[in-house]
Length: 347
Image (cartoon, rainbow, N blue to C red):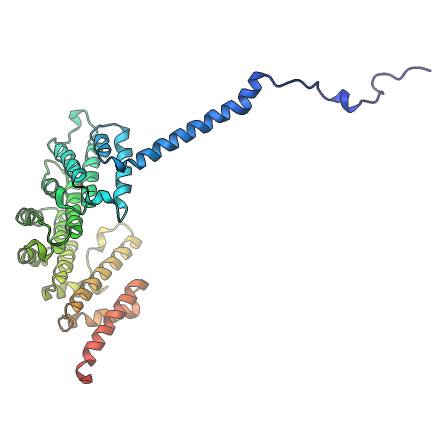
């Protein structure tokens, strides 16, 4: 008999597997050490960002970072903005932080933003806008003087966004400052007066809004109302509408004719500044909502009778407004009109 050749011989499981060898050092490194290093780096980076996010424990860290023109400045800006957004953030009452941020803004305002300075103009303007908005989040008036300076500093058009942001921040700061706290009323009103006569409608509109926010606690209500009354005739619809809602906040009936315009879809103006029909619709909804809120404030102050010219427009919105919130608000106001009309008969 001949022996079977190699091809016909059966192959066992042992013959088909490579020999088992102990893992070498390189294999262990690839399997365990490299992933551990990667995970460690991720953890360290996460802890670093978490530390930056919690940097509010040392508020001066924010200021130090913002003073240097490097990427850490913007990380600090984001973290500070997030901290100030929290409703009960202790930073909102931190006078030292507000003073330090005011110092950074004041220092930045001394330099006219020009490309020839070797700086990124957009970055400089963005920083100033950010500082204005941050100061507007505080509940102490420490940053007011710096904001007033920012609202009136314009050596070229690149600084106009800073002025607008400063006026928005002033309105927010005034609204959030506790009653009875001094707000440098004369200087504040002088600045808003100047801005309300500016050639830029955006500046005038924001000045009108800030004037409307001013409360009787500042001792300046009479002057602010006089300025708002003048702005009711402004050629810009946005300025007129801000002036009207501001006057209504004080309960002044001079606002009623402009409020009527705001509530009537056929008469409302200023929509053409929006780029798309959807944006125009949103703006019209906002204008109507603001007018309804203003009318509601006047009604709450016992001025329902003076609001009678608004009644047809309010009742129409209660039935046909495209926005459900506007419809509901208008319906409630219409009910107040009805209750007032029925009150004498019930006596």
